[in-house]
Image (cartoon, rainbow over the protein chains, first blue to last red):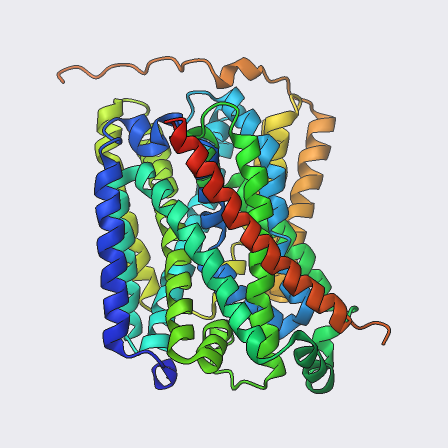
Length: 484
Length: 42
């Protein structure tokens, strides 16, 4: 059991959790006063500036997977593993010009799925929504699990208690504060994470230098410092494409693009990519150091926290605890908010009510959707499925298959709606088959490639002709129901 | 050794990442102060 290696007392762990819970909830209540309207709650009144815009992108992309999975990848795939996670920064960088275009094309839009519906029609919208919601739940579950594992490993708090409390805190301040609370806390959380990881690495370097780590690896596990490590090289491309797919399609990033005020989106995402880039390298180094030190590994995804705790004792454990808790919260709140937008605006308002609900009704539904999503995530986290990598990369082929449909939708007037629909279906299915029968590191690569071929060939053979103005025009009002 | 990441390269990567992290935090804080002074952080 992980709790047997805990180095923080459960009391210390609970005190830290209680402190964070009070802080985030108070800030959520304070900032939540700005979120009375639907635009205020879902999109922070579409007026987010450069500092908060860049920080929220950094904080959201610094998931617990960065602080826990990057060391795991380094431990298993060496230097390439460390670098492969950092390639996910390219997704942020490439999304920067897209953020500008999204804001310009859809000045009154709410979600990525809404874009797909207006651009490609309802069948593609349904498939996209399924992929988006599946991915969002996968990501949420992987982070809920990470929270439970962290508290169990570091403080001996039972998995189910830790996971439940982290989810409850995030749901709480997101419900009361909306996107203002998410973005505001993201700023603080991004600073905590970056400084926390950097301080742990500096502390590690005061006890073992990089050359010693390298020497130890070259002797005991030479594959980890080998340049030609085929599975790791494949992992680099998989990580890159997974990152692109995650960012291009996910409403987490679209909602931020729509929430930033005009002229901010491109600069904010570019800056976020540069600030985020070094974080997985630092976290990954902790994994390499652990491998070099022959640290006994109970769970590979816990290697970073365990190393910090071993070398730095209680201070290291608290630092890692604080950094990972902040990274968890920053991503869980963002996902909860963006996914509830999809559930309310697309699933309930768009699909079930067929547009027959006003903004205030959607605003009320959004709070309930957040609570419902929190409960669903909690239920899915209960069984404690697999390791983080297994859970996260299962969604790789699906999100990979959305890269080309989104790109073509934003930039290619002749992209064919039917081709896009089949690109997402075929890319997901073939990618998943490769994930299962070949290896996790091939899923996103294959899914993206198949999807690209279908989009390009389908659109060249039967070109569409889209009018961009349709994305910014008000939709026709639905038939009104009588009696209310 | 050919075909192996050198210790120097690994050191450079780690220390560059540390420097970049410090710079990133500084930039975020400076930008926020600027936005707050302008009265329009969001």
